[in-house]
Amino acid sequence: MTVVQQRPIIKTLPSLLANQIAAGEVIERPASVVKELLENALDAGASRVDIELVHGGMDGIMITDNGSGIRADELSLAVARHATSKIESIDDLLALNSLGFRGEALASMCSVSQWAVISRTADSGQAAKLTHQFPEQVLEVNHAIGTCVTINNLFHNTPARRKFLRAEKTEYRHCDAVIKRMALARFDVGFYVNHNAKQTLRLPAVSDDIGRTRRVAQVCSQKFINQSLTLDYPHNDLRLWGWISQPDFSRQSTDLQYFYINGRIIRDRVINHAIRFAYQSILPPGRHAVYVLHLQIDPASVDVNVHPTKHEVRFSESRLIHDFISRSLRDALGGTVTDGVAEIAATYIAQEKSVGMNVPHIMQIAGQYNVDESMFGHMLCVVHNRFAITQQQDKYYLIDLVKAAAAWVAGHWLNSCTEHAVKSQPLLIPQRLNLTEKQKTTFKQGKSLLLNLGIQLTAEASGDYLLRYVPNLCRAYASDELCINLLNANLHKHDLDDQVVNVLTKTRFDLSKLDLSDILLALSEKNSLMASRESACCWRELNESSLQDWFRSTS
Ligand code: ADP
Ligand code: MG
Image (cartoon, rainbow, N blue to C red):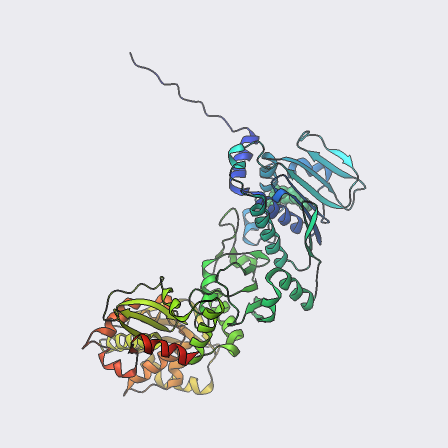
């Protein structure tokens, strides 16, 4: 006898269940509710929001705004899934001006809470109210213009999710972080927060530099403001402005890093990299800059519809954005960048001391740099992104990575030049260089030498000079700087070796893009390309006491 297994029939999910499933994606904890409600308030043009939290938001969240409000006849739609007033077609997504657009936040949070929405538009004398008890029945009530959403007992009907909530303090901290992130996005909006009926944050709306700076101090600390630089760089339809820490103010964690694109908080790899690149020779490894930065950009050139929580973005020209940010920051930091062993190590050591470490302790910082066994032994640390300290039994080596990298790259580069085998890669966006008259002349005379080196720079009919191709070998180096430095060096065929090493030594590079183990291995091989460069003092051997001396002499 065969048993016929009954196949479950296909049914459309009831809307409550569909919303609860969606809530799993958008609403993770009270802070997610706060984020969505604040976004709605800002999208509605509010200039003031009042936030009441009970027990970290787990038992109650009430957010009141003075925005445009929702019409009584649209109220039920607002809490329905996939209902939004913010976009009408897929094209609107490409030029998004609002924070929300998915039309599922209210529906999601309402499906997992006991809720009420009260709202009044400017042209209505009465407010309309809808609650979870009678979700179909709009009531008339008295209320100011704007919207008030209450979300009580979050996850009361999905106990499995409620179990994942943490201590009241933790949930409150998450809500507080969301509010502060939003507050640094919109200085023109006042934020007033009560937790368990006590005022915990009061940020009045501000409209001038003094006010904005005061708000940043309230959120990030006065100490940061005292040691920060302000910047404002407009460039075509881009603008970057905000506050960044000077090199002597850094943190062990990345918690005070705020980056906004068109008022939306963003965590993005391209942007993180651009900022780290700018700080690379300034901050010791393991230390992080503090910043509040706003990038304004044509909404059509950035796609935010990548992730439901919308922290990631996709740029149509990410290279251009990357370089614009890192160049602007480098420029702003320009006045404070220090170079040379003494100053670099001094800052480093001062920081180690200030957190109560004695010098040998810094030996433990290294981790991220993976170096194969060579005569240098293993990597202990990299001091200020420039000096590697390695240990081989009781011997220490101090390696100047700037020089070592320059020697290594120059060696390989010129070798492949002689064989006419330089591999170059096109820049995603050709880079416009501002050349001086002298550099232009050098370029005209030395074009073939540059081409031979794998660098394609073109003079356009418009008078612009565009950098189009750079050698793969030089990918760790800032390509615009490299090209300009080559032009300044006025290369000639004899002693090309030394000239190129010189140029590379002067050019900023990103340590993380270099293969350190290759370089160190080459450096330790006798008879290798680099053996002849030992005299260029790429490295020094030290014992424990001379290592201590080195640190002491530089502090
Ligand atoms: P989305 O914000 O993605 O459109 P939501 O579920 O968050 O979706 O909100 C649905 C709609 O309800 C919004 O498009 C908006 O028209 C309206 N709405 C929600 N909150 C507010 C508010 N605080 N003020 C005015 N309108 C609101
Ligand atoms: Mg929304």
